[in-house]
Image 1: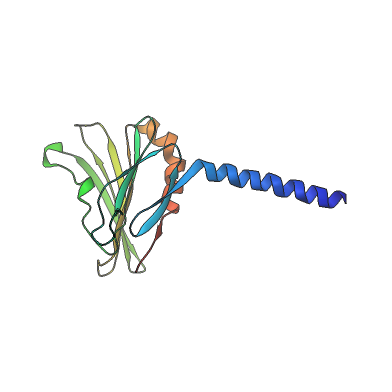
Image 2: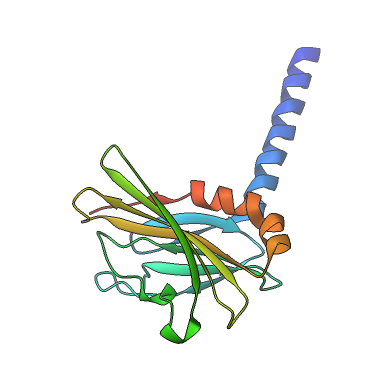
Length: 165
């Protein structure tokens, strides 16, 4: 009898932790993807899907203090994510590197502009024939803002689930 009570207590504790963890994130469902983001961030849908009405292929997730934005662009196949394009007037400093493995290319790039003082870091993933492409990233106001949100950003990146028709 004591063991049963103990097991029930453990089950309630675990359910409580699960509920607590679930309260910390929300799920955003785009046209061809879903992703989990911190529940205190606001969502800014960006590029509308041309094939699914009322859904988006990209979105920004903004921290309460507006010092950090997470980004996802995940269309059905490939596409152009003009919502993060650098304006010629920005005169950005850009660093990048590329890795290819198992038919997938990952391009890591960081953009810093003097105009807004923000640093934007992205990973663009494409398949071998470039018919599938998505971009995920973070924009931040400084090292402190990045460090404060790094763990949440890594969870955000890992939570991406993509769909196909």
